[in-house]
Image 1 (cartoon, one colour):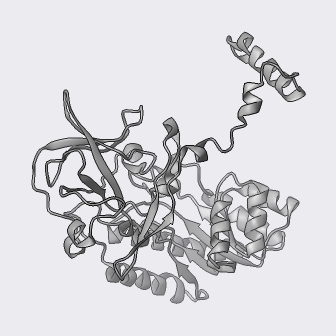
Image 2 (cartoon, helix red, strand yellow; image 1 turned 180 degrees about the vertical axis):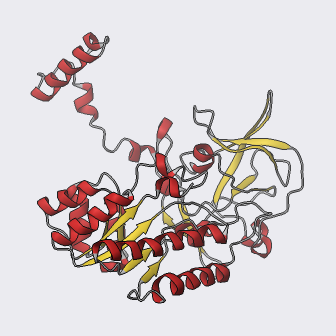
Image 3 (tube, one colour; image 1 turned 45 degrees about the horizontal axis):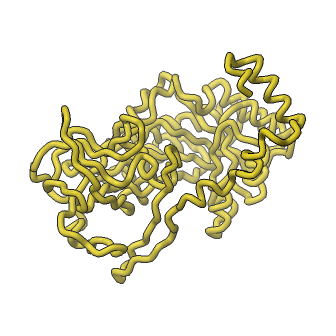
Length: 387
């Protein structure tokens, strides 16, 4: 729902929005329909559900899960084990049923790789969907109007990685489009991709201060950020390059751009030691880097820049251990920096808590809801008597 509201506030409406979700509640389907978004179904049952509760929109799409046909990758996992999308048989049934229920225009979607830097692997996704569009036409008579190749275009997180060859990717997709769509006499398709990471990844960095050094069985650099600010390294063991800025900078100012990323590239690694860069959560996977050589010897007070965190920072954040999330700043072409999201504080964390009700719990009459929960706990928990 939040992404739909954000789209609306940004002035996006209609088919500029593709609503892809799973286990979707009715209110989110209704909001997507209200905005005129392309509703991308994740399951056969969702077609009947939306038809019964609110009716189908004119334009619908379907997410395909190829199962053993594709292997996925380390980030997105094995398609056979993924909860997303339709099997081939379900997909064909879904197209037929949606048409019976009044849908007039159709799209096709998949998402089988993530952060991929291999042109041939991304082109293979286009081959799969273009061939599938032909199969759908043959077996259902339906012309797929829009083909969404999904996301997956990667970025070079590591200094020795290269940015993907966009021209080669475009040429490969175009050749397949001509061979599998145009040369077969199929109607022209709108071909789209979801390039969120590719656009926003290099555009964001996490700035954090070194607060402690610790040496036991390994060398640790403790910073004042944690997984609440950037979850990917702890969740996926994902690499994010880290630069140490050793000269002190005034607070609240940020280090000048030319010092942090000279020539718009990551600094070269000059091995000063190998460190685990860690946050302060009570979880051992709260680590931004493990056994990482850094460009300088980190000291308390130094700045650490964790690169390429644009799409997966605040949006994946949380408040575990009572950690407020950090502020966000926008660096503008004229060199100025503006705050676009203030830092959370403790008042934000406790805003939804009704302290008077909690403190009065032992002295107020028990209502029907509280009584129900007491009975549930007494049945399910050996500690039920404590409630």
